[in-house]
Image (cartoon, rainbow, N blue to C red; front, top):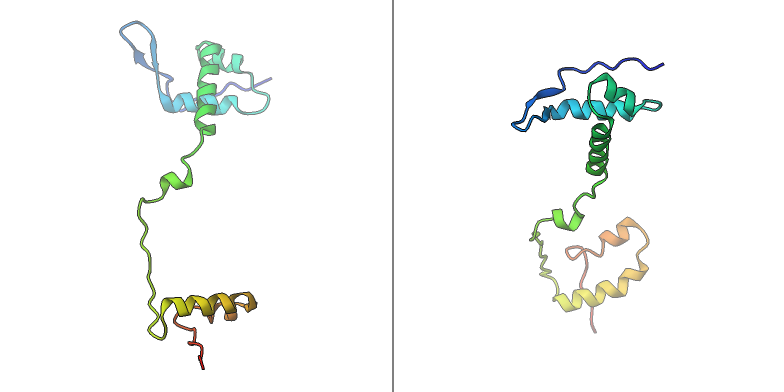
Length: 128
């Protein structure tokens, strides 16, 4: 047999002008979390707290939709502009650097090899 659940405070905050109850959102969430436990009867929890089981099921469904709602895509959360670091190579021209980079890139195997290809590390090729 299930234990009677105790809530931290009263579920009903007051009544609306049309007579319907206003419920505390934190207590609604507390009831939904109680209902998520294995073996708990939604109908029994609703009866214990004096609410309609269908209303409690609506709260459970709303909670599930909030939890399962897709979060914004990573692209939507990125800033519209991102700072770009531009590196100049005083030793060589950009075209010469790129030619040398693409020549040596397939030969790089270690972290040190790749670091050696950075613009400020690359030695300008000797052209005869």
